[in-house]
Length: 150
Image (cartoon, rainbow, N blue to C red):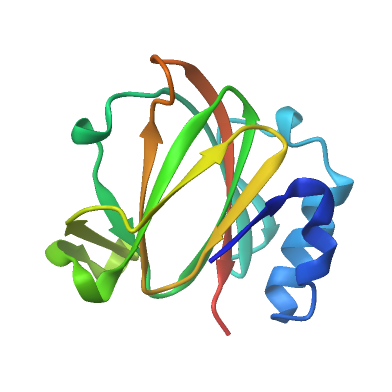
């Protein structure tokens, strides 16, 4: 995983061609102007899901991981924690290969404070739970850039 200030995102160019494409798009685009739902960048190679939600207590959230995509988490407004854990120490609870979704049960190995100045990039094998409230429930406007693993 990569946890960084959004202003430092360029440091991570060179990891993969599709991640470079995502970083370029993120840096050149006002993500708040994206429509709700899926926004195309490069077909199934890079796209951005834009959505809003209210954060909640950690015990009401769930862990997920992916095999085909890297997730780049970007908050447009609001704040949350994202919990992350290696899938090797968690128990798989469900799987939908068509949707590139694997659900997990377990506990966090790390928690990251997220706001509009931060970015969290999670790779396959890294389970993550989003929507975790920091102090109290809060509305989050979010974009998750989906980057196909090469």
